[in-house]
Every structure is written in structure tokens, then in C-alpha cells.
Length: 386
Image (cartoon, rainbow, N blue to C red; front, top):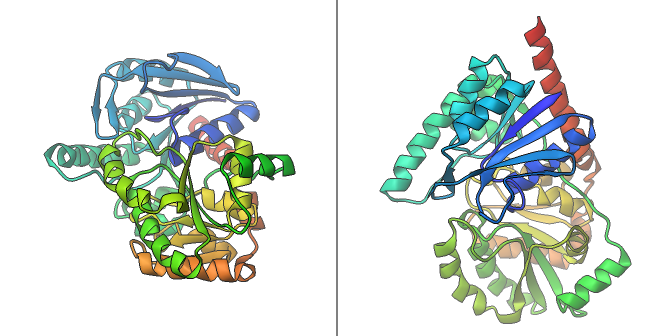
């Protein structure tokens, strides 16, 4: 099957959405499908075309940026060209180009599958307000044209003002997670590289340094945790410098983090081996997201698969992994006091939060996720033949 996947950013851009798309694309290619990614060339140093892990990647030049969105003048031409060749078109939103591509696809008689990752929330201001309205309208056009809408959970879909309108089209599929076991040598190297000393109580967070991720609440909570557990230390994994659209947020947060001294460390983007060691070394993973731009948090599955419990915000979708596995604590979003209490509880009694993540893990493997998408794609092809 020829599958065209379209999204604004693809790897090496680092976000939950790009990780999702990359794992899905690789798994579909491994199952024998011809997968093409149509995306932005958000950095001029990136090649316009390349093939990675069996996936064809086509990157289009960017002429303008609106917050995290990009304007690609060449998109209509290339979308028409690649849609004509595809058996099915798979769109990931938020994405400014999704609506015209969905309409092109329907005009050419190609089925459209939409993966709706989250409700978009742009910063305040006139330009962002206009962009938000345009994006919302575009999303409705895309959803109306889509045959199936995939989301991570029915919990989020039923609580999303947008997805509720299309609930009959929604099919829940957990995001693709990769659970890696850490080798002893990798753990030793990880400890040495990041100076993890005996007796330290490691709290892990894996995310971009972005306003919706709630890192400031973890910073405030850490001050309270240190009063009872002075050996506590946060390891923050993921991009924290020059994150697109988050420069002002990083500038506000930097002095807060600096006051925590060596109790907070930014580790940057890690290799798969280092990520496995990170989950192994963390006694608890925290997901302190504050709004609906976080819809699941696949790092929860990866953490639980390594035996590490999670403290997550009580947000639709985000709370699902802890509810399913009972492997952690759910706390109110944007509440440093409750976050601190939960972290202290897990650090003091980790055995109470071991839970059983196996069923969640099996449904979240990239191959399992790809197989579920494959079933959707095949059903749409069969329906078209009828």
C-alpha cells in the first residue's frame, strides 16, 4: 500500500508528535508498505529529500512562520502530486496545511485518515488570535473531510470541544511507545556522564521545555520536596534551548531553575540507550502538563515499562496510563503543592506504585499501532472498491 503521511514537523525535530509519526512510519514501512513523509524543511541544513529506515522523506522550503506554524508555498503542488500516487492520505494535526490537503485528497477520490493530537492553544496577541481562528476553521474542514479520526484515547475525545463534534468518526489508538531495557554498561556510563551519585533520589521529566509542559510547577514542587528529601534531583531530558516558539518561556524559567543549583540538571536529547538508562535511574517520572495541548504523554508508557512509576496531571488523556496500570498518582494540573505531595509519596513508598503495565505496553508497541492503522487503511480501500 502507498501511504502518504503529512505533518508540519518531522525528525530530527523533537516532540511527542514527531516521535509518534516517526515510529508509526517506520513500523508501517517494516510491514511492507511504501511510506512517504511530506513535511517542512524547517532548517535549511536539512536535506530536501532522503530515505531513512525505509521511509521516503520530502521536505518543503519554509517562507514564513506563525508561532509554531510554518508557511510552505510549494505545499499545494507537491501535495497534489503525492496524493495522486497514494492509496491513503494520513494527516497529523495541528497543521496549517491539513485542510487544503484533505480537500485535494477528496477531490482525487483518496481516503483521508486524520490523527488529531491535541487542541491547539496559541499565545495571546492579535496575530496569534487570528492564527488560532484560521487553524480552528482548517481543523473543522479537515475533520469533515476525514473518513476516520484517530486519537490516543476516548477520554480526551469526549472532553475535547473540537473532537466531541466528530465523536462518531473517532477511533482510539494508543500512541507508539518503545520500551527499552537498560544494559548494565549503559547504566554505568549514564551515571558517570551525568554525575549521578549514590544516595541521590532521581525525579525524571522528559519533554520539550515548553510552556504547556508545566516545568515551572515541577521547579516549585522540588523546593517543597527538598525539605523532606534533600537528596532529590530532577533530570530533565529533551530540548531546552532554542525550542521553536518557546524562547520567552525559557527566559522566564531560567532564573528559577538556576536557583535550584545542582538539584536540577538539563540533559538534552539522549540516545536510545541513554533514555533506557534514564528511565531505569529515575525513581519517579513526572508529567506536570497544564492544558489540553498535552493529550497522553507516551513517555509514561516507556517509564512504566522500565518499572518506574509516574506522577501525571489530571487531564483528559494524560491520566489514562496511570488509571489503566495503577502505577502512579494523578494530581491536579498547575498545583505545585499537590505535585510535591505526590512525589514525596512515591519516593517514600515506591513499592505501592508498581502496578501492572503489560497490557498497556502490548497495545502501544509501534508494530501494534501500525497494525491498527493498517486495519483502518485496508477497510477504507475495501470500502472504496465496493
